[in-house]
Image 1 (cartoon, rainbow, N blue to C red):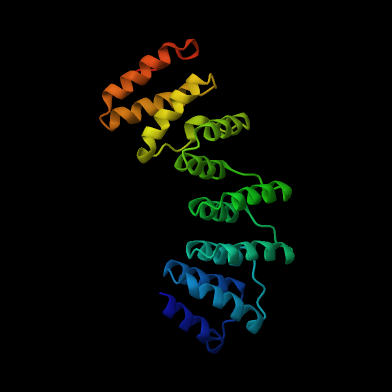
Image 2: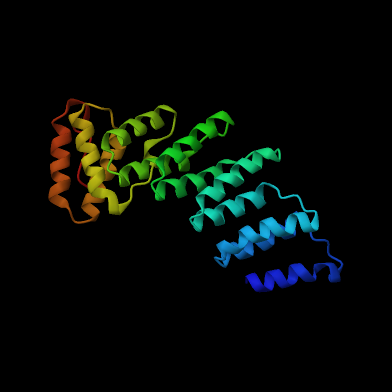
Length: 228
């Protein structure tokens, strides 16, 4: 796909088709889908000055996604800074791409810097942003931080039943519920019920019963949970 796209892009002047930022973006997307991540950086440096093309937000977003997938996070950060220098405001999709890459590679301080940058530039985190961070805390087994962040997120108006619950992390979700109850922290019954349901789906019936019984021993959760 990438070779055919580049061939067509190079032939466009002979076909009386001007090469614009739109065709440039299509070329980048073709390389992205072909997983030629390392070559996208070269295209980004080479073609715009050569063809007098001004990259737009889509151009930068595609390049940043490629750099993140290639593990070149420092270059991705550089492009994020370059966006603002060209008067282009990054959007939440681009920020979420970078957040995912930072958390996956355990570069937590840079992820937090990105959160601060989003706040500074008035880029409002969406549900996906919060899921990315919550899942990273789950993977790091940061129970207290996960509970605190979950509480903060719900307080911002996000509905708890919209959060992802990954089957691979059901044991951690169970620990999270237990820790929340022991520490008397608020946790929505909707989430508790989803954990119970997930335990049953994974044939952990006795564990699900234990969670229901434990929840019923706390006044705030009494009679709210049930086995499906």
